[in-house]
Image 1 (cartoon, rainbow, N blue to C red):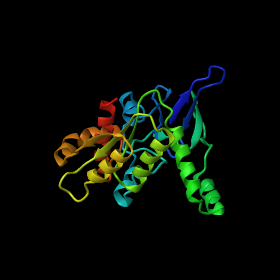
Image 2 (image 1 turned 60 degrees about the horizontal axis):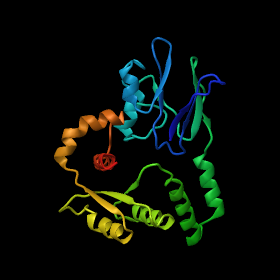
Image 3 (image 1 turned 45 degrees about the vertical axis):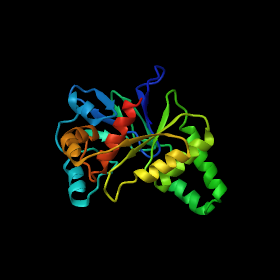
Length: 239
């Protein structure tokens, strides 16, 4: 999640971001003195946040090191992401120092100290995580490649809710070695999900590259981002 809570009994707005930064959240300062936040960089740029200059340090990290996931800054000077797993308060004085409410390092240390879990423990943890994410007022869907990870999630979805209507979306590349449609279809049919096949093309990638970069708010490294772009668009179209 990326959320903002405005509590009239306390100053400013409380900002919070999920454990791994799956949902983006940015803040920035306007020339008139006000502070703003948004989930997309372009929303802040459009209203004049920052000075519209490229953050040269961030650009160097991408061009020289291929670093596309640096959580410390955006590609626009004056626009900063709230770090994953933290909360902060945004007031007319600016953003407070982010406070971590989750630590991946601590989680890893605990996991190493605990040692490998049994098959049953792993299955229970997966089912519990999936069950939490089934809380929804609309139909639930999932990406499905036919690989181990996505197939396990589909199996878990069905294990925790045998009756729910499930939709699975698969990027397919007919005639190429990377195509996984047959495996995805096998998994989908096994667990009774409604399958949706999406076929991204090189021509489509070229045509939509500007729009992808605009929404990403940053350069992209692998073109596989386009496959997910097509999958998520289809999921949106299906409701």
